[in-house]
Length: 305
Image (cartoon, rainbow, N blue to C red; front, side, top):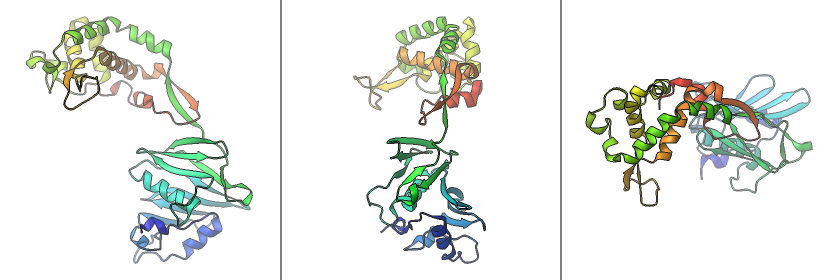
């Protein structure tokens, strides 16, 4: 049996406080392991704390992931996913505490928690019949529905995502449209194997063409200067070299290729990185988006491509 089979089922502040008081701290430390059955006490990465007044907290590697809160006659629980490699463990523990208790394979209750990738979590709310994707820092507040067995969201979390303003993006791409045509033509004529490795075409090109991970703003300047087009295009072509099989799929055993559409996509990323503040706008979304546009906004023109 896994130590997670001994995770206790807690649904109220009173139950959480009683569980806290029943646990002895580790010898010489103030840490109280949350799991007491089986080998649970050895897993001090999952601990329980009490602030002395109105909150009992469950922590995973020091990050609070679940809180039982009592405010007068009102009670609710708060779930806060935290970024890190322990997201899957954290969401599993939360799910076991609120929904399944000691049996990990019992039928689902109202709300299902599970990790989604490295830093996100999926929550299924049966009240609205849909999945909610949340990331770190987004706090969820839940309450038992009229004292029953089902958990319901007190308020659906507000989430936001960055989306491109197509008109602005196309205007910026038009500034380097001639360079894009030039580089696409070079891609059609180039021998992809000449662009493999840390340099290009036998070190005949110097400067930007022989560099790795140039900043977007520096590459943008080269794309606007016709005299630097050979170096800028050589750098982009080297970045777009991929091995693909006869069906066009990525393969470690395929031939080296430079596809014109990959060149266009790369140049578009440069445009997005340099003009991120003008191109992207923040919109409210129902579920977390995975378009990665936030990385352009955070890094601005300093992104290395």
